[in-house]
Image (cartoon, rainbow, N blue to C red; front, side, top):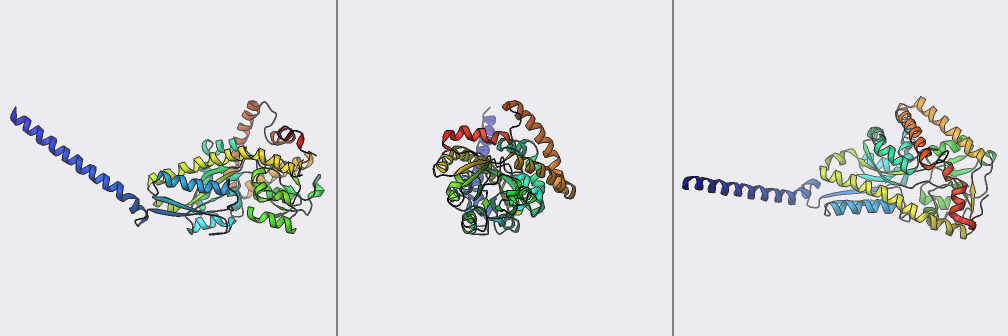
Amino acid sequence: MKRRQAITTAAFSLGSAALAACGGQRQKQRQRSPAVVGGDQAGVRWRMATSWPTSLDTMYGGAVAMAERVGEMSDGYFEITPHAAGELVPGLKVLDAVQEGSAECGHTASYYYIDKDPAFAFGSSVPFGLSAQQQNAWLYEGGGNKAMNRLFGNFDVLGFPAGNTGPQMGGWFKQQVSTLSDLQGLKMRIPGLGGEVMSTLGVNVQALTGGEIFSALEGGAIDAAEWVGPYDDERLGLWKVAKYYYHPGWWEPGTALHVFVNRKAWEALPGAYQQMLSTAASEVNLQILARYDERNGDSLRRLVSEGITLVSYSENILESAEQASFEIYEDHATRNQNFRRIYEPWSRFRENILHWSNVKESMKNVLPIALRTEVLRKACMNSVRIF
């Protein structure tokens, strides 16, 4: 009996010592691991290029919020420093910077890069496409993220949805545009496939970042421009240089933003840090959309009080734009394999979700009708002049 107790006591003591040693080793490993990741005692330090000026506290603010969230989750060991457009690279060169590795990540809109491949547009928004809710459904549950990352992989980056503007407005014009003839030769800032559609309708399309729009309108370099919606447009001062504010923004019914991450930089991260970045992007994706929905109404009322005229696109322009949009999609699908691989399943998804949306909303067609005159009439009451 005594011999058995002695053996048991010895075994327990050895086990306790082993556990203590193992626990101490784990503790040292936990203390060491952040320093090991970055190759120095400071942990991981990344640069985030963005396409936004600091004045846009929704989008640039979203990039800042994402960086802060990653820092919080990693106890400061994973540090991401956002840079406004022009600090590291021009706003329309964020993807290039991430691809080359001069920035480990970047916050931008994928449709800025349709010159590399027109299929990039699907990551953000396409004319007469998906609302913000539908876009998220496609990205997260409908195979969209997988399809887009297959495309992004050709450029050595991964993409994570990290924001959505919701439905956008249809742009600021110095003069009214009532017919297709009014669009002929018009100089307009508009990106993505919406720019391609406007080009087919006779518009001279310009590519400008948000921070360049005001001066271009004021100086006469362009006659019209679209950005996002009332809150951002008010902050950019666009109402001071163009008085006709059009709706709906048929080319961007629910525009997603992305964080691009350099593939090698991503693969060098430990799994826990990868999860932190992915989680922070998802949180910012929700946050930015909520901010726009909360702020746009008050901004629209203020813009109206400053004397802007809210104008609906004519049915003729909308119908022509819709027809041109799907002709462009079919043309790209014929000529571009990447585009076709995304467009065909995306089209089926769009058809199914619009059918559900029609039933759910008890409307003939949620987009673009839900964004047209009646919604804005009710939102602005009698304080808006609608033509």
